[in-house]
Length: 302
Image 1 (tube, rainbow, N blue to C red):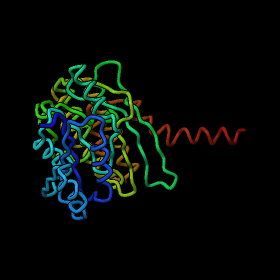
Image 2: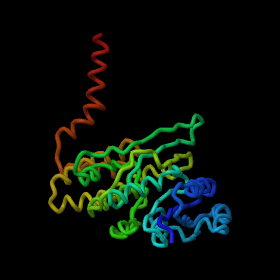
Image 3: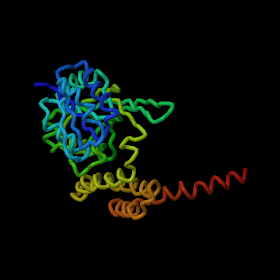
Image 4: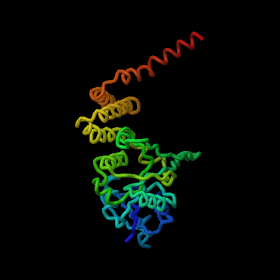
């Protein structure tokens, strides 16, 4: 029985999935299994994975489309390993990823592991590559994760810890990682951090992330109501303020980026009802209306 299970959900990623599988096969840690969960692909994913499955390198599971969290859950539920690595089908792992995260989690006796990422924009002609590091707060991780998802990537978990928090919730199809990170912190699950870019995140022209702009806002709102609103309504004033701040930012994003007026106004009004702030009301008007007029007057005076 393998000690680590690498779960690779895929939906129409036949062009890229070999790179993900190969990065798992090249791990310096060898006591692992690789599970590819085909979430209803209609491209050549099966034909691409078949040689790996025939050779016994990969376990292939097909299911009707349930989205990313549902595909991850299927992989976790079928995994033999004590530890789970979640790898998106169009991303890759540094060859030391499992070794370093496993060593850290076992040494610290924690439940999951955070690492930095290398973000590669492969849709650009002049391919852009940057390292993104986790911005860990000094204290109170629970409030920090509710304020914003400060974790760069958390691809490594004890299987039991994921089961304890109820696996991935399939009602949140976008912002999947932030949602489960919140539940892990709320459940008191301790994490370790390896300050090295061990996860290779590739942003392509046809990436799911590029296609779900409005949907991302809708699922963010659903996440806020699921966790932040529930805690705020239970009487936690600090979380009520965080809920209001997140709603305000989301409302402005709806208005400015997607022109979803009704959704934007609704978020802003609810934000005010949870934490009325004159400064927050004035701030956007100052930056978008008053400051340009002041600068224009200064320019003419000069």
